[in-house]
Length: 210
Length: 210
DNA sequence: GCATCAATAACATGAATATGTGAATAGTGC
DNA sequence: GCACTATTCACATATTCATGTTATTGATGC
Image (cartoon, rainbow over all chains, first blue to last red; front, side, top):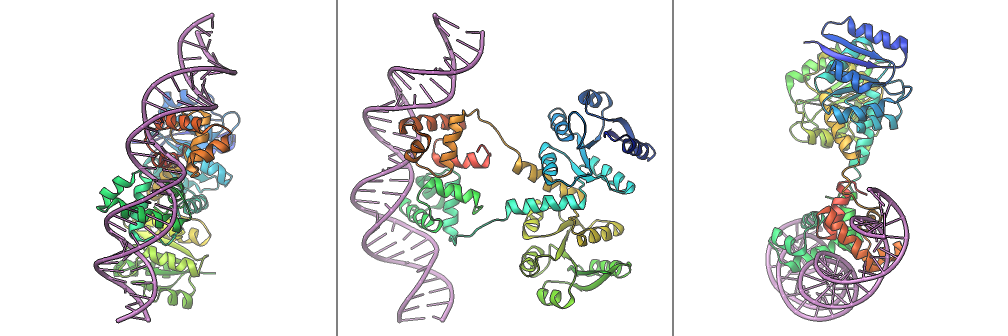
């Protein structure tokens, strides 16, 4: 069973190199190599590729827009982005558009085929330097967890607040009196330096306390 | 210039295999191989590794806690996590703790050395299936979500709610009557299918409406 | 012109929330 | 033992919120 690869790459010599590499490798078949994204959907519909190699920089429609367009019609199609730039924004945009992986053009031929194979198999190959940027952004988005010194019970009550529960519901869920719920919430407000349910919920989610 | 590698791995045979692999490869030196994280900081201080190979599952302190501890003292140290599990939570926790990369134990020896080298050079190698999980989470976190067909004014009011503002404050901020604020919020509740400020704020943030 | 809708505004009522005061019990650490 | 804290519960009061009903104005679309 061959992996059907389609190429979108505006640089002619590179496009032909890749074509030759894929064409000459057992287990791979190149079902199209185009210099831009005109008739994109038509090409894909007719030649049914498994994996698409997509350059980011191209005349006309760029690679990121192409990914978005393809994702709508073919949610399971694998799209491997390829670029000479390590631009963080381009990387993040590609990923959010639905790219399956992101590799740099300085990748060695052997590694290149590995990447295509891994993409086909559902993995998300990334050049290490690209992965580094993604990881940093990821850690940044998820880590800034402040503490505020909330007790376990207070965290529990705060979680309930975030779920949108009323005092009464929280009291029932925690098997305590509504008066006790009030006390906990009062203490939470003091520790968080807020004065309303809205502020507390907002801070709880944004600062990832819960 | 050799890359100084230190190993933390509780499985003896695997630990020794890795030791032999690194020891026998030109350009690599193994400066320690331990079965748990006792005396972790002391080992690192004395043997000054460039890259640490850290198992996730270990008796005593687990790999993720070890990463956190190391990151505080050695912010630039490279730490490559290694595990048999593709557990999403473990992966995300490791990354947020400050791991440099995350590879699976079924990695081939040749690839293994590549990964260590890439880590040393500042990259963030990830097994493709791991990268896939990270990418999915990443795309989910950054992609704008549903719309709910809110009008501009409603979105504006909702933003104010998320900031924790009361009806009175919103009225002043938007230069409208508090009665109008009520109407907008009532309509927002209908469109979001919620019945309280808390639920609305929670949904607004989590579904990235604002 | 006429229907539709977003935005504006007012009034009323019951429910929920914010905040203060006061107090009992149980566990921790020194 | 004693100080400290988490957790529990009660009462009181002013404010805020949820919801319904009703209505005017301006912009959009057909």
